[in-house]
Length: 97
Image (tube, rainbow, N blue to C red; front, top):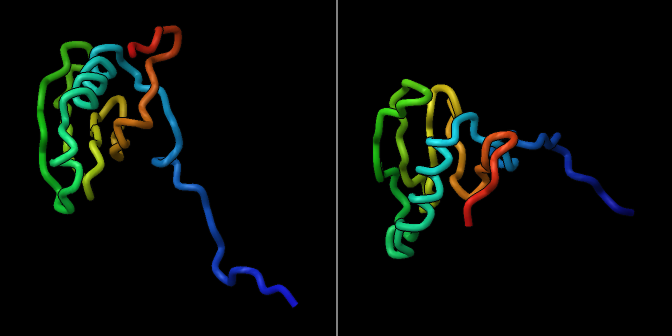
């Protein structure tokens, strides 16, 4: 007899790929992904990588490491924090590689 998992599961919306609302924030995400070294990604504590004031959002944006994963938190684009590798360009924009 097969037994199923007793606890209900839900998909965490923060772990789903999602578009960033503003092109400048997305450009910063690309830069952070490009420049954060693997030695930093092995860290387990929360650490701020970079902060900036986005001229498009007019908000303070924070890039940080959480359990070794580069993250972005922007009140407009990602208020709950999103992993940088899950960020997609704004609708209608081309993704930079």
